[in-house]
Image (cartoon, rainbow, N blue to C red; front, side, top):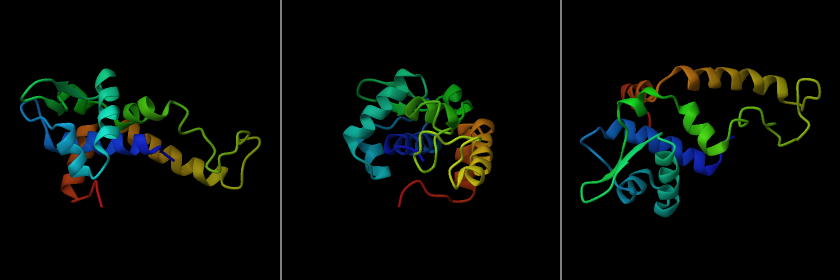
Length: 143
C-alpha cells in the first residue's frame, strides 16, 4: 500500500522517536545502518521530512536528525501524506483507476473497512504514543 520511500520514512520517524531527543541526534549513516536501508535514499527522505518540519535536524559536528516535542505530538498520517500524498487511502488495492463505491473492484468493500480502522489509528495516535507502544510490546522496526 505504501511506497518504499514512505515505509522508510515511517520506520525512520519511529526509530527517531524511540532513540532521540533535543540532546541526542542521529546521523543518516547511523540511522541507515540501524534500519538496514540505503543511506543516500534515507538521506533524501529525511531532508524532505525536515523541510516539511516533520523531523528536526541540526548541522555541524554534533548534528543529526531527531524528534522534538512538537514532532512527537504529530501523527504518522502527516508523515505518510507528505511522502505518498493525500490520496493514498483512496487508491484501489488492485490498482484500478475506476474503483469506487459505485464501481467497486472485488475487494473494495472489505479493504475499505480495514483502511478506515487503520486511518483512524494513524490520525488518533501520536508518534510519541506509537513509540511507547513499540517499546512496551517489544515490536520491531527492522528484520
